Length: 405
Image (cartoon, rainbow, N blue to C red; front, side, top):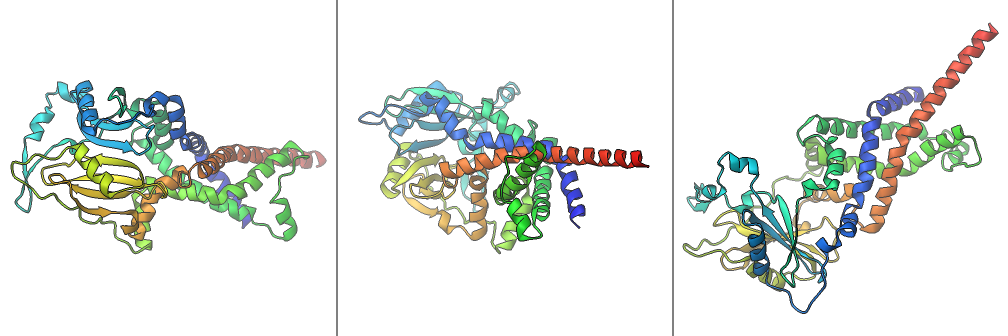
């Protein structure tokens, strides 16, 4: 039986080994992406604290002056006094402008809703922020207009997710299939590792250093493979959740949970009244929502939508963000969707990215994930060496048998 599983383990490893190595190596780098970005771009993320910060509206006005063709989508304000403010801006693509697309015309369209209410369609929230503009909250100086897609880390991310292809290309399919193959490689690896006796168990829990290269390579593959297997299983399962819709459907089915989110409340439409400013929303949020790391305010998509404010409580894990809904006319809080309010399936799904990236317990979990990812990179190499050694041994045995005949 073990011979059968050894063949499965081997051929799956040969089929997906290169992709697994790429995924593990790039994953190890991306674990510390935030820390590396902050270290290499301190002037972008950090400022010198002063006595008083400018209003958020003033900061946005400076951004509009710097990027007049952009539309503000969100504003992220940190409670850390040394952090810059991040303003998300949607800048129309030049290609679309050349074809005659005019975003301002889209803003003037009126969409009739089922309830008969009129909405101004095509506002900034219909767009994704293409750039993040970093602003000094004390001086109002625009520090940098940055787009993630132009960074080196995006290239590493694209290699990790899509093998440098597109999000809908063949690279995504290859990595998605390889993730599933990796799961079965781990499963068959555990079966092959499983010892027949207590004496064998001792040898499979310890790496011997005073041995031949062949034996050392064997221990590096077998022993370290066992110790990292539980963590690699977690990484692979979370990756499957990110890559495959059918896996997510399974999460909700197993937990007997609904994927449907709670209905988002609406603002009380006041005809002729202008929407309140970002600064008024921030002021309202600060009064009611305290002890958080940041306030991420997103603009309403139309005339009866609400401002959404995402926050991360100071004592919470990274994935446990809460969302509050603020009326765009009177700044009152109309409701909330906290992490605790989500059902089991939604909580698990919301946690998958943090689990996959190893950010759930901060630096300690990141260090662990970094080490595990690097070891995952080595297993296809040590496995191939074991395979080649086995082939060489069989050839030598066959040569010896032929010579004796």
